[in-house]
Image (cartoon, rainbow, N blue to C red):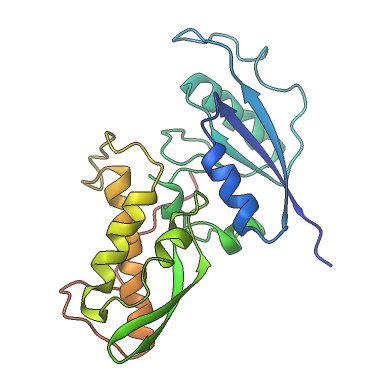
Length: 230
């Protein structure tokens, strides 16, 4: 029996709660989650983060949902020294071993995140189609916030010609990313990015069952950006 992967989650004032809940719900009991809560008000600049971060960090993987950039930077450096990989979606941290996709559903499979990357990250789905309509969407891998699974439940009965766009829109309804953010590199807000990668996932799933909707996009276009900073 595979031992549960030990995941240490850092959050401020509940910032990671939707994703923690998603990992627990869709993780099939594969993860042992420990949470570090930082709830007190913090100054804009932290010269010393030691009072807020634990003295000992022990985990197979760290998930960074912190809001304060100084905390994220110091956490990343400490984890790098311990060779513990970190997923810090949306962050600008440039530290080896830290993966910083614009959203949690933009994370690739870097091969260093253990069981976590098997179930969570860029969406991977399969579809059942009958008479030109979606019968069922099976999620093999998805966003830790649960949007991939929740949107999949809404897809039954949709015509295949509309399925990719509709799936992207449904995901945006459930996405917990900040819609006001804007990434100049990708030309999208995090919410729009999430919708886009799920749209691509649906196009790939339809292609796999021999359906090619008249959507003028390449479903095999690389959209994943969870690279390792080196």
